[in-house]
Length: 425
Ligand code: DSN
Image (cartoon, rainbow, N blue to C red; front, side):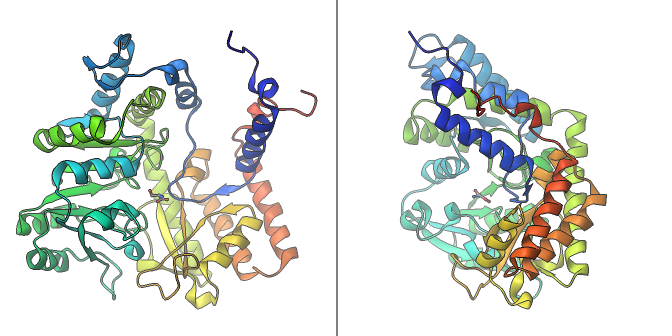
């Protein structure tokens, strides 16, 4: 018989670690721009019995019996994804954004083909052509960057590069770029080379469906995204595109690179998509950007430099060179103050990726908690105090106390305390 014991009895070690993580989240400022906080409904679906089932194949074409409810779940997820983003065909099976991107490469290209993508230190992702990733190992990558003056992607320069290198595919989209991406300009670059255009909007997806960031759907042949960033769903990937390329890509997702889809995650994606279709989600998306702009202004007012001078999205990169410290030290100091960020390269960073000259911060998670523009000056203040006092333990402890009291105003999981573990249990 399977055990019916709750986790706190079945595995107190893991239960206690979950409880500690709940405490960490409750009382710290989550400013990693690629993280968010899912609803109870999404959590419930992700933690459901759907984890048990093998459903290799696609709805109506499975390699296992007993998939009738799973077919409905996957169809709902796909329909809702298309309602949100537009487009012709959706595939909700990728386990992650990297898998989604790999399926596009393998579906549309041959090894050795030329691909143009954003360089890692200019905002790109590992799967956009990094040498340490499959993309950089199997394909001939031509990296593009931001203009050194404006720190923006300049699509005139990218069109010229596309004419010169004639790539088979151009990737637009970024993990550390705060401004609007000119998807129409990228389409011109793709057309100039006869290339596919892939838009990886993992970071911007929630803003796009919320109507506060331009959509690539009319310009890109294929759009990839994760579902867990601004979109506020469970961890996973999604691909949407035109029918012809999607036929090739879906054959790669399964059986090309994945086996059984994670149906509990797919159900949770469907739940999150339904949430994102509600009018409140538009307000949420707008608030993410309002908060980010106010936070950037608060940092600039205190003498901090922001790459490209500000943000039009959920994210910003602080250029720390004028503060005389590196990203790794700032990340540690902020961590001691209860502020979670990640060190991040700035364009043409003189420091290596393990050190960096910047930190990347974003507002999706704190906006989900209920923080508003009126809180952003306080958030900017504690960030600046932590960074400028990085070697002063007393000042970091004082900043930590302020963060704790700020977080207390926006309860998160206090109702769950003791659910997973308790000293008595
Ligand atoms: N690793 C993700 C991020 O933090 O932006 C991108 O996939």
